[in-house]
Image 1 (cartoon, helix red, strand yellow):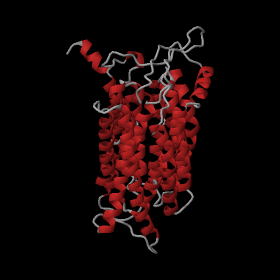
Image 2 (tube, rainbow, N blue to C red):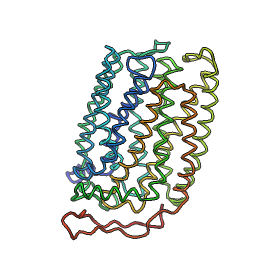
Image 3 (spheres, helix red, strand yellow):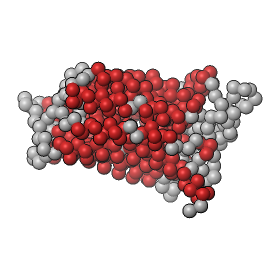
Image 4 (tube, rainbow, N blue to C red):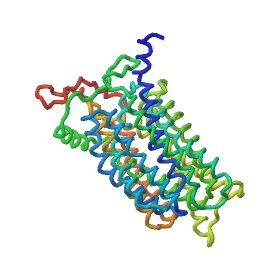
Length: 455
C-alpha cells in the first residue's frame, strides 16, 4: 500500500468518525455503563444521582462556552482535554463501591463535569461537522453506535462477574476496574484525530473551520446563534431528552436484581447501536427528499416514543401500587417479561430519537458558517445538560419513581409542538454566508454556500 493511500485512509472522514466514536466509547459510553450498574456502593440510586446532578450542573454552563473553546484551540485538543477529565469519575465509583468513599466520587463528578463540557461540544461538532452532507446520517449513526459499545462492554463484564447475584444491591468492585482502564484510553484516541484542514472528504470539499478567532468574536457569534429560530425550537427536545433515560436508570436500579441490570445494560447497548445505525442509514436514503425523510422519521419517532412512554406508565403504575414491590430476577414470569421488555423498547426508540435530533441539528441553516457548528452543538448540549441536571437532582430527592415517570412523560409531550414546528416549518436562511475578512479580528473563513431548498 502506497504512502498516499495510507494518508488518504488516515485523513478520511470515516476514520475521524470512528476515532470520535472510540473516544465516546471510552468516556460517555463507559460513563453510561457505570450508571447503568447503579450507584457505586449503595443499593439505592440517590448518591449516584447527586453526583450526576453535579456533573450536569457544571456542564450546563461549560457546554455553552465549549463551542468557543473548540474554535479557539481546535476540536481535537478540546476533545483530548475533555476525555482526560472523565477517568477520575470512574475511579471515584470504584472507591465508593469498595471502600464506601463518597468525597472522591463527588470530586470525580465535578472533574467529569468540566471534561464532559469540552468533550460533548467538540465530539458533536466533529461528528456532524466533518462528514459530507450526503453521508451525515450514517456517520452520526456510526459515532453514536460505537458509543453504545461502552454499555455493551460494561454490561458484559458486569454480567460475567455478577451472574450469580440474584438480589438487589451493589455489583462487585472488580467490575469497575476494567471500566476504569477503558476510560483511561479515551485521551490517547483523541490524539489520533486529524485537524479539519487535513481531513480528506470523498467529494473533495473542504471542512469549514476557524482560522482565527477571539473571545470577543465568540461572544458575539454565540449571541447571534441564540436568535436562530430553528435552533430555539430544538431546545425543548434537548432539554427534556435526558428525563427519560434518568427515570429509566432509577427504574432499573429500584426493581431489578444485579444480574438483571447487567443483562439490561448489555442488551440495551445492542439495540441502541442497531437503532443508531439503522436510523443513520434511513436518513441518508437518496430516493426520498431530505424534507420528507426529516418529516417521516420524526412522525415515526413521535408515535413509538409516545407508545413506549405509555407502556412504561402502565408498568410503573402497577409497581407503585404494590405494598411490597418485587425485585425482578431473570425468568420471573410474565410481569418480569413486560417490565424488562418495555425498558428495551424505550431504549431502542430513544436512540432513534437521539440520532435523529443530532442529524436535525446539523440541518440548521444560517448556522453553517465557519465555527458556527461548534457553537450550535455547544449551545444545544448546554440545554441538554440543564435538563439532565434537573432530572438527576429530582432523582436525588427520594422522589417516588411514579412521580419521576409522570414528569418525564409530561416533558416529552411538551417537546412535541416545538419539534413539529422545527421539522415542518421552513426556517432556512436563503442567503449565502461570507465572512468579512477586512479586519484582523475577522473569522478569516472560507465561503459557505447555504442551499435554501434543502432541509
